[in-house]
Image (tube, rainbow, N blue to C red; front, side, top):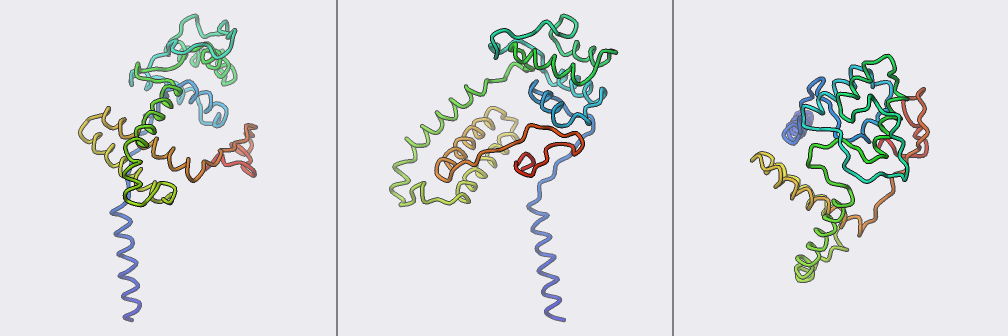
Length: 237
């Protein structure tokens, strides 16, 4: 009986510890929105069954509410982008919604129209968007800063980066994630993104040492199974 009691106490303690360390997130219905045309195009490719006209219109309306607009923000990705097949001559979110409401709407046409806009350099933006290449440059700058600032200290304490396991890098990353959460608590969004830059650079450093496995994804979507076969790829990981 004593053994069972102790086992039960241990089990309850484990549950309490799990509850104390749990993270909770509230999901609000009809709150979804998009920040990038790529997100909609990928959703059409991989999850077409979820993209009802109402779902699309609610998401686009929420994008507008969150300050996003459809604007020319990039150089065309192809030499002669086809922007002749557009919505109704305008380039804004309202015109996309009008098209979804029209009798002409289907996902194939929507996919082609959005792809044409993307290829022509248009995208959703709230005025704060940065191109991925520029972000990578800033992460490189953070990596250079880390090497110049911490290399001497690493040698002095006898723990060079190359000897640190992945778990130690995860601890460093979690520390800066906690600092980002603190900045969010204080309504300091820019401070939080400073911490995210550090997180990204730490992840890069960890993968420089331990390697970075490639994501392999099959692109042949099968609507009968709701996605990839996943027998030789990791698209769900």
